[in-house]
Amino acid sequence: LLAKAHIAVSIGDLNGIGFEIALASHEEVKKLCEPVYFISKKMAIKCAELLGKSLPDDFETVNIFDGFDVEPGVLSAKAGLASYVSFSMAVGSVESGSADAVVTLPISKEAWMKAGLEFVGHTDVLKKHFKKDAIMTLGCEEMMVALFTDHIPLAKVAGSFKKKRLVEFLKLLKTSSGLKKAVVLGLNPHAGDGGALGNEDKIIKEAIDETNGFFGTQIYEGPAVPDAVFNPLTRNKHNWFVAMYHDQGLIPLKALHFEESINVTFGLPIVRTSVDHGTAFDIAYKVANPSTLSYLNAIRYATKLLSANGL
Amino acid sequence: LLAKAHIAVSIGDLNGIGFEIALASHEEVKKLCEPVYFISKKMAIKCAELLGKSLPDDFETVNIFDGFDVEPGVLSAKAGLASYVSFSMAVGSVESGSADAVVTLPISKEAWMKAGLEFVGHTDVLKKHFKKDAIMTLGCEEMMVALFTDHIPLAKVAGSFKKKRLVEFLKLLKTSSGLKKAVVLGLNPHAGDGGALGNEDKIIKEAIDETNGFFGTQIYEGPAVPDAVFNPLTRNKHNWFVAMYHDQGLIPLKALHFEESINVTFGLPIVRTSVDHGTAFDIAYKVANPSTLSYLNAIRYATKLLSANGL
Image (cartoon, rainbow over all chains, first blue to last red; front, side):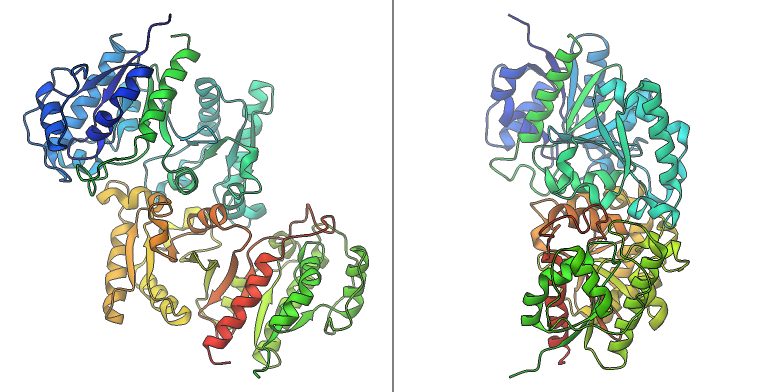
């Protein structure tokens, strides 16, 4: 009998939808792993009360900052700070070996800004903490999307195009995710249309060729025409897509695979997965049955990555 | 009994899939309008022979440049030039009053480049010919997408953001299309996330407010978070979307409504609709039954716009 993985659950912004998803999924999650929730017992009881529920006895919590009131749906600096503390401690518990992987519930980037935090999201924190070019990947079994650039203004995307950087990205993605084949999207309309609509797609082609040469096999193909590759006639030929920027990859993913998708960070020394939705302030503490599919898939994928790594 | 509209059909690149779509749809199209095909009789007979079919007696053609051989699937300067001539004459026939609207089959932008033509597509020709900021719109009944910027490199998109230009665009789109409500997408990831990921989304908000003020009613809403607005929980709240750039609008459109979508140019003194697919050189003259849905919808939409205009 194998021991279950210990998963550190970063509880997210307590004014948002994270806690109720964790509570609603607890029984199911217990079948998959041993969860530890990075929220204080006092706060967990309060949140459960707000939901008209009681906290299960085996809902394992930790000692953590809880000096604030939960205000459902409110953007608040204190709740933002608390969600950052929960995340930091959850990551720390994996680094120290007390947990095997971290799974995150949603934080509010605006609440982090309000709290004076300079990070634009979980992945950004991880990149800076581990000093690694961590790769933000979202998706599900049919469609995983890795983002070459992620939380940057669109104006800065084209300026990020250096062949060397893309080659390093493609190598790291292959080695850290274990993908077998992937299609790389072009940057410009019609992948540049032979140069008529931009030249970055030629750099992408060179980077693909160089990376395939390095591995000695045709792992990557492309650059694919961005608005064509997700059409129903061609998208099923691939299950890994490399997008050049945030919305290029996430618009089709959320159009096609909304509820089941998750967020995975590759290229780190730890395993980290996440839900791929936001805090949903508008429905927090209001909806009887929030969707738990993304969270459960995040837990499942984390345990799968741990198994693949022999943990 | 109303007279049927006369539709000038620009036949597209004859090495591509356009002619066979026109031929396969001819009987159906005759029920909707009186089509005139901008191809010479000689060339039409040749193309039909290549498909193992004969030309119907009522397949109305025109005298037009045909001094070249059809080479299925081949990118050729001569075929590119011929497709440009077909398009120009079809547009001319509407300007002169011999036809009521133009419907276009696909050309190859690369073939146009090879032929030394400086236009990046049909819409670009129309903008220059009529000296109008024509609006490229693609879609179907459930989802129409108007593009604020279209065939330009991604690097130039953010630089195109001037409030005045966007206000003029939104006004022209409203008056020329007759739309009642539309959602305008943000430019940056998360629509800028309160400024953390770019500031253009604030300009978009100002432009929406100014345009709504001009019309005295809430026609436009937004800026919407681009990767959220097309998810299955929210997309059905809208059937008109204003995208800030080509792939932002066309990736979700082709993911969700591939075969039925069409291309419409608003803001012109003439009615013009088009298929929204390309020349499909790889399957031209090879597939027994190419999809005619986009072409038939383009014909239908043209006749609908003509009726709305009282023609």
